[in-house]
Image (cartoon, rainbow, N blue to C red; front, side, top):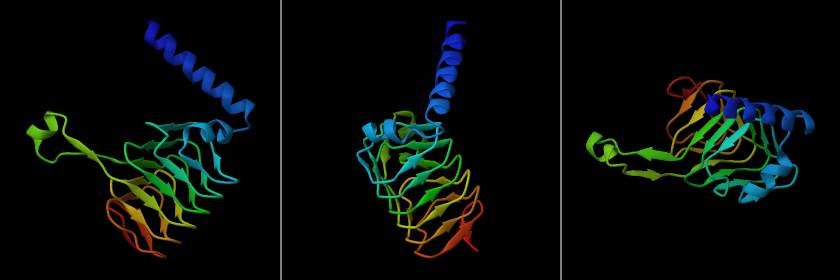
Length: 160
């Protein structure tokens, strides 16, 4: 029961923070990100593993509900925008079940170029690079390189 009450308390506190800051936590995120460019905006709620591995260039917009599992570097280029509920994963677990059971994993970087649009609820898997000006459709699961200017969507993400 204490656990539920604690969770409710945290959720309630989060809602209060969100309202006080008019939806944006940019000032608080500035303190945890490794690089936080000019005119960046992060909507609440925002969740990350460490924060120190996140590098935001100028004019980056991250909509509500983003989750960054930043065990590796996450670089987001200037003018890029991420829709609500975008997930970025750096942790890559071993494909062999025995080794995975031993806790063997690695962290791969995720890099998003300049002027990229990532649609809502898209998932970027470990090691992904999205080139400048690319568009990732809502709900896409990106597991490989997206060249500059390309539009991708679907599961797995394919050129459209």
